[in-house]
Image (tube, rainbow, N blue to C red):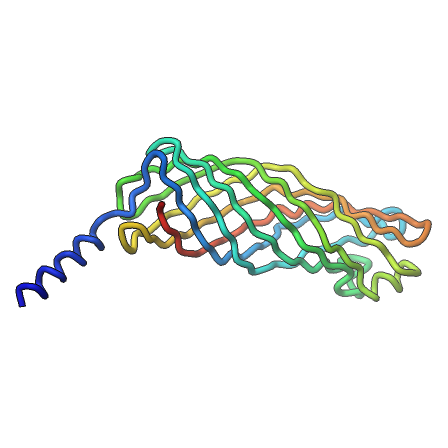
Length: 217
């Protein structure tokens, strides 16, 4: 019985110990994220000045790495890639989905952690984002509307990012995480159909909500 009580006390002590991060520590998190574009589109020029586009949401995994320069100040590198359908709006809304793309938005933020020694540790951050678009494809409805096979190309984007989040201890090294980011992503989509070239400017600007688990090293 005494042995059982000592084991229970040891487990309780571990669970009570914060997974506190300090200078020199690394945190690795795996999150599931919901990417919700707050998109705003210009016209499709010159062919359809009354037409525009919208960018659909996505749910994907995300991996991030955080390094602590001091007990309070850290840097986080966020890695994920997400698929997005592009849908016609305005005069081209009847076309439905007109293209799709993959977005790779590596984001680096610098964070301030308010309570590094606590079991619940909120933080805020700000930084920069570089978004690379790849695997762009048109749909048959867009090809038909523009009169032939259309090549879709989206320019890379450089912008700013802001975040807020909180870590909740599970054990001495393992914790739960909730994180919300706003990422400034602006691009120009170029639609090339034979000798005809159209373009549309799109502010994607997603809010990214993540929930996941992390470990301190």
